[in-house]
Structure formats: C-alpha cells, structure tokens
Image (cartoon, rainbow, N blue to C red):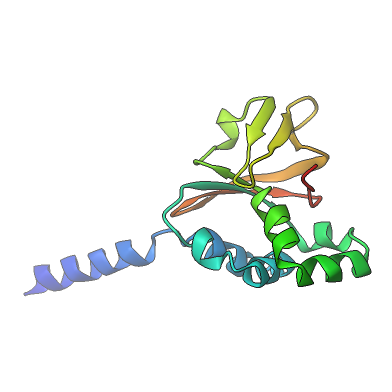
Length: 150
C-alpha cells in the first residue's frame, strides 16, 4: 500500500513538473501582457496551445511600448494585420539557441525573418535578449523590439 501511494505521488509530481504550453508560459512570465492580449485579439490562442512545435520570438511589454500608442491601438483592432504581425514572430519547429544560424528563416506568416549572429543574435532589427525558454510545444526566445513583416 505504501509503495502504491509513493508511486502515485511521484507520478503526480512528474505530471505537474511538465512544461506549460507557449501561451501559459508567456502568461506566467508576466512580461508579455501585451503579447498575450494581442494573441487573444487575433484568435491565435488555440494555435499556440496546439501541438507545434513552434519557435516564438516573443516581444516583451517594453518592446510593444516602443510602438506609438495610436499605431498599436489600430493594430490591436485590425485582426488581419495583427495576425500577420504575430505569425511573423513564429517559426515552425523547435529551434534552440545552440542551433540558430545566420540567414533567412521562413515564418508561419509566410515571409522570412533575417537572423544575424554578429555581436549577439538579432532577428530583423530586434535583439534576442533571452533564449531557450522551454515549453511543452516549442521554445520562446525573448526579443526587445516588435518585428514587422515587409
């Protein structure tokens, strides 16, 4: 009986130690409130909670604050444009920092991000400031600027 209880507790602990999905991880971090609100406004929550895997270049709240308020408000109200911008931050597959190579990377949006590795990693004009935040359906790399598709 004691062994069954211990095994049961251990398996419950293993389940709770499992990583959260991309959306739950972003919510828990607390520094992606604008990104999470934008994902909700664009109707992308279910996609980013899906099986993936996805690599997300996640702009912080400070990154969104660099966008003039009127422009950001307009973007948040335009679902099609918002979806384009958000999916431009997502790459199919799970790309860890150690595997990042300079060059063009196709995004879920359809166009390409330019990745450079000279003097730190950049994605278009955004600096990658934190890497390899693991989730159960991909990985998040934090960026300091919202990148816009061409």
